Length: 420
Image 1 (cartoon, rainbow, N blue to C red):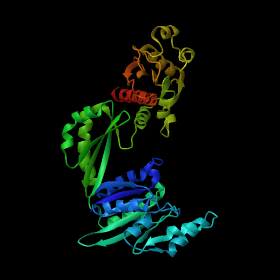
Image 2 (cartoon, rainbow, N blue to C red; image 1 turned 180 degrees about the vertical axis):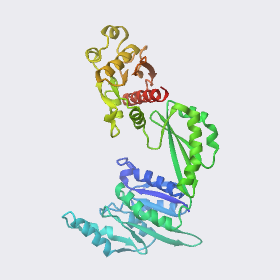
Image 3 (cartoon, helix red, strand yellow; image 1 turned 30 degrees about the horizontal axis):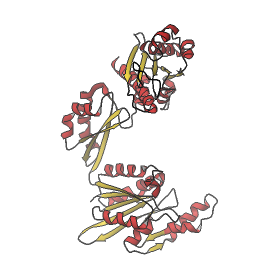
Image 4 (cartoon, rainbow, N blue to C red; image 1 turned 90 degrees about the horizontal axis):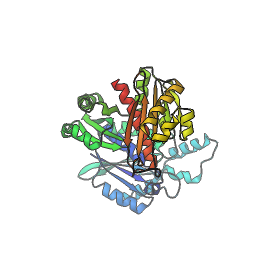
């Protein structure tokens, strides 16, 4: 018993819309413990939809469709499914009444084209849509010498699809015996270590069968997904926790959080727990670090403010950077990062001051100071200010160097807070 996701819409093929529905449904199927091995995206064309269905029914026993349930001529999902199985469509009076009521609630009259959304293949059940005018279907189709085929359709609007999935589909699937075991995952998140180095450190956990461990990499971050299959979520968590703890013990400070915890939320929690504050002085990042620090609600409890100091006069007049040092060492230097961090800490009377100065490119680099060279300063309470040099790569785009610089600065603060 395996499921297959089929997303319909030419806009998906053109890249005009990000396919978040497929991402959501894949996670939901995993959570229910329903195997799913294939995904397809097909444009608004009946012949091609038929081709996809023909392939899918040979390898899957549940087909989940999203998109193509609207009232316009290019919305072809229901029509294509019905015609593939040589089944006539019938208009459901209760769906027509529901659509009319939804139009009336906003002071409008239902258009004739919306009657198309009330057409359902004979023998299929309606999957109600409480948020929109496009209902879906749940259709059980008997098959000789094999298990029956389950077809479910959802609109492409993510909010409508998710509501219909939670309210109707999940209870239905559980009642039908799908997903006897569930799959629960925990995502462990790391910074300051490469994917290959992390894999070498924790190589022994990759041989496990339940839970399993899989690596992922993204912007300056590596993640390990630890997944367990069990009868209940609590049983799965009991399998995951010892493995997750073992990984954390091996990796140490390179681990920063799990699941939806972000670097900024972790740092914010650490600052609040110590009743400490931070201010920032940014040159090449142009406010990027301050933006990350204030992503979380309640950040005013620990974030004092910041100075964007692109011009050297701002560094001199506001942050009290020594002009002779600017002439001697240049704005991108350890000495200037040191003074900027102390200057912003003094201005805002914060416990910590962070500075970033560097060459984000694409121009401005030299042989001695190439694009991607970054200095980060961290002024701390009652101790010597820390300055770290990073080379983030001269082949990277400017926007990426700026983002990585801000995250490096935030991670430097995190490590200090945990090791102090």
